[in-house]
Length: 354
Ligand SMILES: Cc1ncc(COP(=O)(O)O)c(C=O)c1O
Image 1 (tube, rainbow, N blue to C red):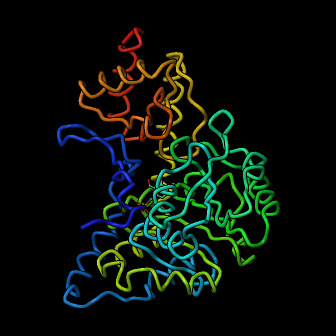
Image 2 (cartoon, rainbow, N blue to C red; image 1 turned 90 degrees about the vertical axis):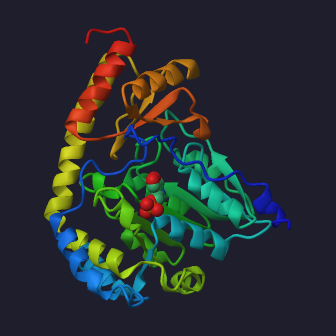
């Protein structure tokens, strides 16, 4: 049996290299479990698991809509935002079409494009930061979708709101712009909301419960879509894509904004302290607006040796070779104790005082 050629040509999607004994700072998960209210909601939902879940995510959509002051009718939920990225690509990209993203953007944008039989282009970034002019210059006649993550993964850097609006204005109306705000909660205090851009019929904004809400294991993402786009995507999404336990859990997580904001506060405080320590070791670390930081070493060999030293001390960061950044490691911000261990290990590795 032969798979279709564009699937046969694909390498399996690369996840973090994690052994069970390692503490993971490799997957940008939250530094703490979700709100205790999530546990209560899960207990209640367990009594309903003989039934299929609500295919319209009614309660979850209504809570999201309330918190973000947007219309519930235009929200879709997915089994992680990965499912929504995949559905966007399979609804709007096919053989002969091109997707445009940036040099160091989230790799799944590319995978989803290739799964649809389309091809992608990468616009250069400057200092690990998205450059809107470079993106606009890279649009081709058959570019159908532009994907940007804001803040970016793996860079942690951010596109400021005026630049993002300039990107939308500079793209032709028949090019779809997808703004993936998986880490948006970590930079909401600095950014204007982009949900109003969705009124333009050719823009979608994605969010997830996997990061600031600490619900990665529930696999729930959501997005705001123009209605015609949402109608097409519904055809592609698994009709029972989010379990009733996951719907109840994430609705409870969204209701507890105080808890989520406290997670963001703790994370950014630990992150900024960690970045200061890393810069003191002469590593280059761009300012991060997410729950991770990218550490830039002088060579790929140096980054690889640092990764080995961390692993020997029981900590797994994310090697960045797959992103074309083999001289970097991406450090998810864990709890204070774990970050102190990571910092001490890197200090000793770099030959500084411990
Ligand atoms: C930029 C970005 N988008 C989307 C995702 C996928 O998140 P989810 O867990 O919602 O599928 C990630 C996960 O790391 C991410 O970094």
